[in-house]
Length: 548
Ligand SMILES: Cc1cc2nc3c(=O)[nH]c(=O)nc-3n(C[C@H](O)[C@H](O)[C@H](O)COP(=O)(O)OP(=O)(O)OC[C@H]3O[C@@H](n4cnc5c(N)ncnc54)[C@H](O)[C@@H]3O)c2cc1C
Ligand SMILES: *[C@@H]1O[C@H](CO)[C@@H](O)[C@H](O)[C@H]1NC(C)=O
Ligand SMILES: *[C@@H]1O[C@H](CO)[C@@H](O)[C@H](O)[C@H]1NC(C)=O
Ligand SMILES: *[C@@H]1O[C@H](CO)[C@@H](O)[C@H](O)[C@H]1NC(C)=O
Ligand SMILES: *[C@@H]1O[C@H](CO)[C@@H](O)[C@H](O)[C@H]1NC(C)=O
Ligand SMILES: *[C@@H]1O[C@H](CO)[C@@H](O)[C@H](O)[C@H]1NC(C)=O
Ligand SMILES: *[C@@H]1O[C@H](CO)[C@@H](O)[C@H](O)[C@H]1NC(C)=O
Ligand SMILES: *[C@@H]1O[C@H](CO)[C@@H](O)[C@H](O)[C@H]1NC(C)=O
Image 1 (spheres, rainbow, N blue to C red):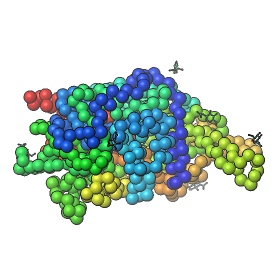
Image 2 (image 1 turned 180 degrees about the vertical axis):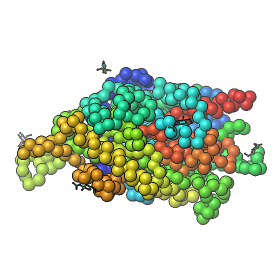
Image 3 (image 1 turned 135 degrees about the vertical axis):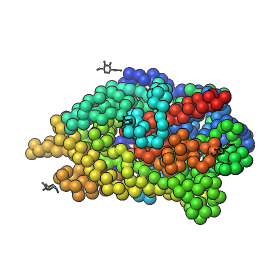
Image 4 (image 1 turned 60 degrees about the horizontal axis):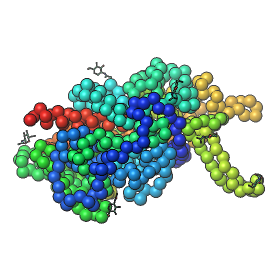
């Protein structure tokens, strides 16, 4: 597993050769939003807003921008602005993200689940959309049917378009993605869907939040579309707790504000006006954590941590799921341009297969004085194929390790492959990867040995020789499991929040982020999270207008 992880980390030596056709137009980074960004140390000790959004992430930024069209909005983000970490602004900073030591302030926060799989989450304005790989693809139809939300599909479409006009790019396929695309079609992953942002069974090219120059346009740029004078974004603002009060409703408690600390550890408060709301967008780890700390959760757990119960709900922190990532990497016998994921294969069984190519370079001392000069650089191109499946069915839970200190990450367990069906789906997906290796298109990626025999050079674990053998395929799936970083759950729709993302048993409190998902939407989740941020913002604006 360590080798597979290293290979994937090294895959972030990227320098995409992208060509823009334009959904968004290729442009420099737009930092206009910085006019609304404040250091939390400069905020008043107490203040009042219409909306308080906890977490300036992938869903939080479009939501904040939208609400600022009519109302005053405070965004509280524990990380700093992207300008503080230049590596988040460019594709070739991806490697830095992965390798930089986590000092508690860096944008790439590491965590290891109790399953033993290394994982990461964003800690920067723009959230995980500022550290991710940029692949952009909309949700599958099944997601809308099974998400527990009564979607207004016209509004969904409008919300996606708003997102795509702002930060999504299309480019011509580079060499490896073209080979990969042909191989998918040859291996029966049809039909050929050309370029599409939609989730379609078959093979397609999709969009990216990186532009042709490799510049990242993450969720932070949605803030530019807000009304900046109504928007206050505090960075290095760590939300400690949600405040509840029974003053205006005896039957249930209402969220009335939050307590947060600045980088000097000074405590501040912000509260909401009448008809306003506190909205949690702290991500699948941060949102359940804050609900639990604030007293919404399973009574036995809260009581044992001496947390006063605001509302009893056994499902807060439950159903934490992470789609397994299983990969193979092969060394390619010729030079390839590095490429980010541009093409995806989606099988009828909803196995999702993505691929990247990258250059691996070594500079190492040669042993035994074989050559007079002690170091020699070696560079070769590598193709990496990664498989995911929709869902997953397996899930675990999240629990607090500290009730007093929000900076102590909760413990989380995903129980990969604990539901039998999941392992079978991985096996199916990896067999499809095996089929790719048998295609004509992939023949050119083989090496020839001195006797003329052809074969792939695997970097890291190869697929089992006998791919019909379930046992060896299952062993491969379990032993090479990594994360696709699409973890979700903890505040599921129907269990913790209702069909409007309101926290059950409370007033004036919603959760809008990946913690509400019972399955990871589409091929990759960021498109849907951005859409939902915009969508809920518009819904709230419409509802309040109608109520006037
Ligand atoms: C390495 C990596 C690669 C990925 N690649 C892709 C990809 O190519 N395509 C794709 O679609 N998806 C990808 N993903 C997944 C995708 O980026 C995430 O699913 C998505 O960004 C999550 O959005 P969110 O709004 O739920 O949470 P986030 O975007 O993580 O936002 C949560 C925010 O809340 C803040 N926060 C948390 N707690 C507090 C607190 N107590 N006080 C104040 N602020 C707080 C955090 O700092 C963060 O900014 C990737 C993820 C990772 C990590
Ligand atoms: C993309 O490829 C097409 C077809 O080869 C070509 O006409 C077009 O100019 C290319 N786009 C860019 C931006 O180079
Ligand atoms: C915020 O202010 C504090 C105190 O002056 C400082 O230590 C910190 O670096 C500042 N943070 C940012 C993002 O400017
Ligand atoms: C979703 O629901 C609609 C309406 O009930 C139905 O026509 C469609 O087939 C469903 N799609 C999926 C993927 O379940
Ligand atoms: C109090 O909460 C109940 C339950 O949600 C709700 O029906 C009622 O309208 C609320 N009353 C006020 C005054 O907000
Ligand atoms: C990638 O490596 C190959 C050598 O295998 C080299 O020819 C090519 O220029 C490299 N590309 C980049 C962008 O580094
Ligand atoms: C070693 O390096 C020197 C100076 O860079 C060079 O002249 C010489 O050819 C090298 N020797 C070999 C065997 O590469
Ligand atoms: C491959 O595995 C299957 C199932 O276990 C077995 O029946 C078959 O004999 C194996 N083939 C070889 C060549 O070992």
